Image (tube, rainbow, N blue to C red; front, side, top):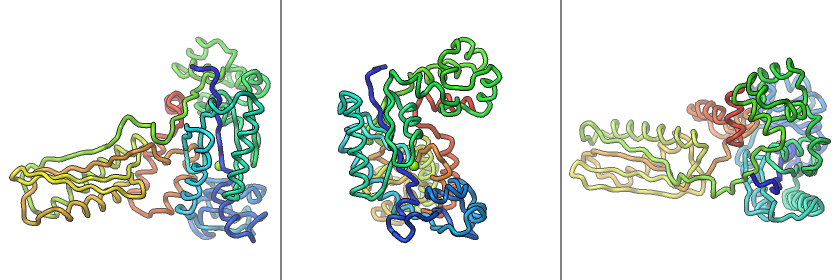
Length: 397
Ligand SMILES: [Mg+2]
């Protein structure tokens, strides 16, 4: 691991609520809860800092939020608007590093190693980035800079909203070690209990505890946590377009019997769409190009592809696009022997976050498709922002 890396974490403050306050100035300084209307069954996706004072939290059922904050303004989630704002934030972040990795709609990591010499530079770059986001988007964010992703995120959390926190490696003992172990990603409730029984309460306690003892009580995760606590967490930031070796995900099916029955053809297209969709989601990918290929019983083959301005990952969307493409080329009454669907131009998708509730609410409101819950469940399974922490997280939970 290169000890000299400097990683920046950027987290937009109360993102959805701040966007609504910006767009409706009368709401500035007032409690705003985005996620659902009173009487609805949704959950609060984001609430303004004013609403938080009433005890409203993201993930809280709207009905409860109404009880806690009856005078709050409740606004339905407007996914498209927030996604657009998110893209504009990323545009700004791209000015500061070629390596920007969004991990959710309102969070990203930047490798700023190449842009900073010292702490002074780090402060300047952090302030400048915050200034541009405020000037161009009228939004604030909190920023943390440290030697790896976990500590950068911890730094961000130290001062919110509108914070800028820099942690130099020499300051780990002073600033990181006193924090409770729950701050360390990968610690589940169960492990927390086990560690507390051993008298381990802080990140520093883990850092100095014998690694083999931790291994004895926590298995392979013990040494992993020990490394994270000592600052050996991942410092890898992957730019948006360099994430994947995978360039496309596809699936094809040869029919048992050649057919021109459109019901059967549609059913196969649907099955293929589900398969490709699932594989995209499993790998946290989304793609912009959808291609359909098919072969007639005389073995002549055809394909049709189209690239869209949006990303697809959902079964229904892949299915409707594939059908459109297929029937634009298919000569009806000619028998088909093979069908295939490929999604390419894939990049790591946004559909990964540390706060599934926010994301759930956003995409639920964006799209009422019945397949969505399945998608979201899958996304929850994939939760995690770093390979090393992800493995730990899944095992420890
Ligand atoms: Mg945020």
